[in-house]
Every structure is written in structure tokens, then in C-alpha cells.
Length: 635
Image (tube, rainbow, N blue to C red):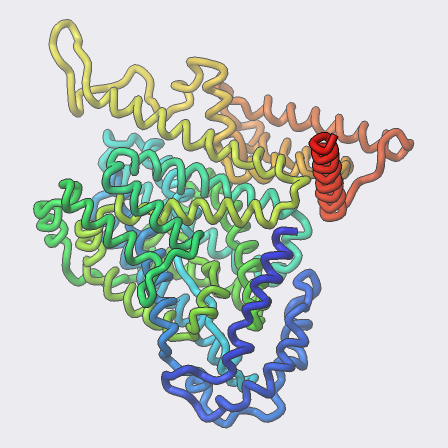
């Protein structure tokens, strides 16, 4: 219901329908055609995504009465005033994500990898993606004669950046020996790069069947897994760092919330600019940012172009251990692209879904080939950028801006001028928005499934935080017979990042297991609860068997993938226990299904209808209580 109301309110804006001609910029000779074609577009905005999108969307509504005579590359104005607003929003969001991810990895990777490989790779892939969606908009405008199109925005997959950092790169680093092994940083980076390649390949393979993915998995489960990253890693983990500098961080966060959620804006200024400027001023005033940091960052300034690097692919075999992270991230990106494309269609820009999904995957593959372990995706917010009046220029500006920043070493300089605590409020807001989107789309009947899906992400975050604290304590040294042992000579009795450390208490081991492969665990738990609530017991039984199968191979509840007969046999391995637990659930759902067939239980209920009934019942109950209260006052 919330989604429907959101779509209705978005559709009311329809900025393109009220501005058929280009506003400024390099107008082309077909600008007058958009008024005629706008009516054709409106008739097809309600096409259902569940049908084959390419046959429905690329229909007669997209066929112009006369083919535009202008060149395809001149079918839209290249730069209009609204592009500047769109550029500021997309550029600042991507920059905040990139710098936050880079700073997280600087604790385990050297600067030559972070700023010499990863960051330049981001610049190349982002430039490619922006160009991809710019060309898509130009070609569609050329075919239809419309000049009111807004290109889809493109950038880093923020939840995926943090999921790969913590679930793959850091996990490989500690599995390879951490600080005790000088090769661990390079191996961790290389495995992350290859995992990113696999993610992009999966997204490209999903392109032909993209419209049908959401019919196989409940939307609440997919959004819940994404929200688990948003709430645990983007919000809670960022708040942990922000709370160390409250005088610098609190005011910018509430300012950006007031601007983007409350509509408090200064005319002529982008909404994200003032919070960043305020945070920077506070950082330099309080000493969080210093001139010495700026001088150190200046040493990294130089020409660092992104170049293809095939060295990481020697570790292709290690990626299998982390498919529990890679596959869910790829699935959530695919679903996100479907949703963003649908939202764009609601305001009149019905782009080809398969080409959009293919572009996301190809952009991620390019990122991996140029050394970046972070996936790329189409950005949410197209309707807002179109309302600003943006067309294609903001994508062109983002491509040029990121190529310059990422290839010149200026990223480190920007981080010195605007410390991560200054940019983190944007990350906090993104984390909140991911959860808000999930709440708006999820029917009230399925809120329990959404909340349950959040738990595995918090388990993973709690384990990483506890292990990091234990490792820091261990690195401080200890006293052995009166003599202090510190630095490289320190060897913990138990590695804080190993399974043995979590076997010290059964409840700790359970916490660790619930956080392993948490994106897939989130999907399974959210799905099972949704189907249990809706009384679709047969489907729940099938999902329980799939979860048991994944547990037996270590795809979930285990740090690595293995063959069941070659799995770890220690007391710390719980894969058989989890497989047995899901098998018991399958038996339970089988009995419930049989009881349903025998008439002991009601048949399965449609989620949307159930939510409407619950909301109507709640509304009637509130009205009854109100009438009772009023009658009591009268008496």
C-alpha cells in the first residue's frame, strides 16, 4: 500500500509531462515533437513489470510518428541547469561512499592498493556506467523524438561496498594471517576483485530473466537482506565512528535529515552541500582535520590512471568460499535495478530493463578488471533528479569528475579536507533510506519478516566489532614473567577472528554462525516467516529444504563453502546442526500443508489482501474506540 501511494504521488509530479521542451542547453531540432508524443507516453506508463517488459514497454508508444531528423547524439540537450543539481547529489553520494569504503580498507591494505588500484578502478567503471545510461537516454530520445527524458543515474552499490569490505576482503585478510603475513593484504584485495567479477557476471546472466526474479523470492526477503546491510553496517557501524566526534558529526546529520526528509532547503544550494560544509568547519575547528593530515595526503597526489590488471584472477578458486556474500549482493542489485527502472517508468521514462541490468553487470565487470572490488549499480532517485530538470548532463559531469578525482590522487586530499566523519552523515542517511524504502514497500502483514531479516546483519556486525576489539587488546601486548611482550612478538592464545575463539561459549558460536553468509540467511529467514504467516506451507517446506541444502555446503552459517563429506569436523562447525534444524522445519511445514489439504487450516492468504484486511480492521477498531471514548465523555 505504501508503495502504491508512493508511486501515485511520484506519478503526479511527472515533470517531463509539464516540460516537453528542453530548458536551455544545446537544444536539437526535434524538440517540438515531445508535446505530441507525450500523450502516447502517458497511455503506457501503467504497464505491468510482471509481464515481459520488453514486449510491453518497447511498444507502439515508443514508436514516433516521424523519425527524428537530428543525429542521435543531439537528441537531448547535453547540459541544462537541472543537471547541476543532479550532479551535486549523485557526485557527493558516490564520493562519500567511495571515501568511506577506502578509509575502512586502509586499516588492512596499503595506500598503493587503495589509491593506486581500487579508487582508479572506481573512476573508470563509474565513467563507463554514466556513459552507458547517457547513450540509452540519447537513443531513446532519438527513436521517440522526446526531449523530456532524464538518464538513469549510476554509481557505487553502497550496501555492497560494505558487504564486500567486511564479508570478503577483511575475512580473507584475517584468514591469510592478517598482519603476520605480508602477502595477506594483496591476497585479500585480489579475492575481492575476483568476487566482484563474479558478481557482475551473475548480474549479466540475470538480465534475460530479470522481470521474473521477484516472483520467486518475496520482495520483503530481498529488501530485508539489503536493509540488514543498511541498518547494521551503513548506520550502526557508522554511528560507532561518528560518536567518537559528536561535536563534529551530530549537527551535520540532523541538518541533512531536515533537508532531505523535512524539505528544509536553502534556495539555490544543493541539499547535501551545507551539511558537508558545516561538518568541515567543525572538523577544522575542533582539530579533527589538521594541516599535517593534508600534507600527508598531498604526497599521494599524482597520475594514477586505471589500468586493467588480470593478476587477481589467479585466486579464482578462493571466491567459491564467499559465494554466500557474492550471490545475495548480485541478487539485490538485480532487484534494485528492476525497482529503479519501474520508478523511472512511473514518471514517463520507461527504459529497457534488460539493457539496464546488463549495463549494471557490465559496469561491475569493468570495475573488477581495473582493480576495484566494489560493484556498480543504477542509483535510486531518478524521479527526484527529473523533477530537478536534469537530463543527461549530470551523468556526463559525474563521469568526468570521478575520472579526474580517482586518477589524480585527489581522493586522499578530499578526505583530508573533509574527513570521513564529515562525509559519514550522507552514509547514515543512505542507510536510513534503504530501511525506509523496505518499510514503504513491505505490507504491514510482513513487517515481522522484515524485522527478522535484519537480525543476521547485526550478528555479523557484532562479531566483527567484538573480534576487532579483541585483536586490538591482543596487539597492545601482555606481560610474560615480568617482561612486556608487544608488537610483532605478540601471539594471542586464540586468534580473535578464528572459529575457535567463538567456541568459548555456545551462545557466542551461535552468534557467529548466524552472521556467516548473513545476506543469504536474511533471505531465507525473511522468506520462511513470510510464507508461514501467509500459510503457504508447501512453499515454505521447499524453502526449508533449500536452506538445509545450503547449510550442508557451508553457503550459510559457515565461513567457507565446502563439500558436505569434506566439511570441517571440529566442535565449532555447526553446518550439520543448521541443516538438521531446517530439515525439521521442512517436516513441520509438510505436516501443516497436509493439515491444510485436510481442511484443518485455512488456505494460504494473499499478502496484499491480508494487509488491506488488517488495516481496515485496525481502522474500524480505532473508530470504535473513538466513538466509545466520545460517548463516555458525553455521559
